Image 1 (cartoon, one colour):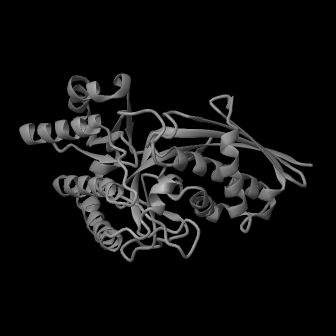
Image 2 (tube, rainbow, N blue to C red):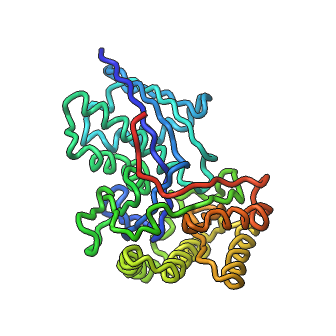
Image 3 (cartoon, rainbow, N blue to C red):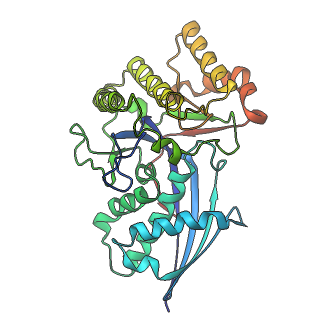
Length: 342
């Protein structure tokens, strides 16, 4: 029996045009294309030790603590990717993982976690002679997608596009592609994640995606997302921050409006989420700053601003926004360059 050990660090990402809804004609196929900033500091470190054997055996630890409740999801993931690499369902897995941010609080821990695991598996496949370097990242993205849709984008930096779209060359529903045709203002854009709520979400993203089926506004949303992808591509190339602000904030609020109008309906924002948004709007109106927000599927606010404004933005966080965070907690982050071996 052969044993392999590998380790990867994979970042979270924050979608600017949101993916919400899966097509019924496949596994983890998006109803619309999406595009995200790859983060730098919010990441998952995963060490995988894999030993070949006749049966499947999995043990997982998070931050050094055994987490058996993760095993069913990982087992499902391995079965989904076994048509690509059959060896994955015959082995003993020892997975040691840790996050630099709170788990399951709307900072896409599934994106960074599943992409890190997918990259580890691809490393083993490469060592076994089953995968070439030329398609390594694409294959890792495809595997990651089968665990968590947004995980497909975490493989790349500074941005990732997932979902077929005529304006993005090489884009696919099966895997994400790197996107780097961006104005210099976006290459080191800042994202401070304001941790309004660090606990478990009341409704998981998986459940939320399912509720888009039969949603009265679903088809209009998919058309809107397609148009916003086209528009955002132009914005990213031109560096037009006013247009960026308008589109990104609209996308964030559209995502949460879909949750609030689904059946059954639900709300992931907290009262403090709205207070943060209102404070950002008031600051922008008063001082003309080019700062904005976006939201993932959770209560936390991603506060976006150019690197050139970092000092002033940090002062604003300390003076006005920090009070709305749970125990005053926030994470300074910025656009990163994707996953890396560790």
